Length: 148
Image 1 (cartoon, rainbow, N blue to C red):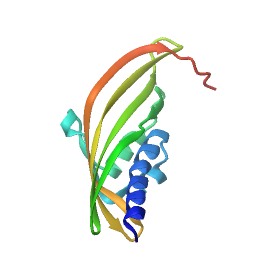
Image 2: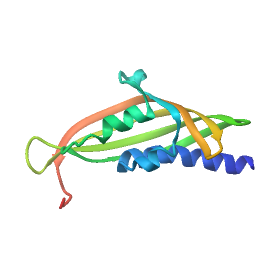
Image 3: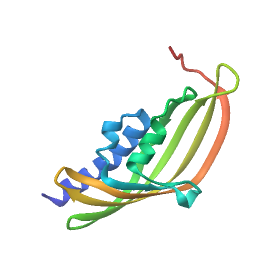
Image 4: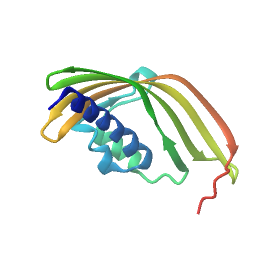
C-alpha cells in the first residue's frame, strides 16, 4: 500500500470517530478504533475509557441532547510501518435543551487530538486518542431550528 493511501486511510479512521460520535452512529464509531482502543480525556479533567465504555455511556437515552459537531483539521500524520501517530485540531459544538422551552445551551470549544494508530486486517484503527481542550465557552441561545 502506498504512503499516500495510508495517510488517507488514517484520516478516514479519525473521521469515523467524529461522525460516529456526533451522529450517534456506533457502527461508524467502531471503524475508528481497535476493540481495545481507548479515549483519554484526563488532560482536561475527564475519564480514560475504552471505546466500548464511552459508547455505552453515550448511548443512554438523553432527551436534552440535540446535536454535536467535531470537525477535524490541521492533521499531521507520522508513519512508521504498521503503526502511526497523528495530531489534529478539532472544534466542537454541542447543544442541549435549555431550562426554558425554545432555548439551547450551546457549548463551543476547541482543542487537539494525539492519536496512536495501528494497521489491522480491516484497515487503520486508533489504539489511543488523547484529548486536550484549549478553550471552551458555554452560553444559552434561542433555538432557531424547527425540531419535529
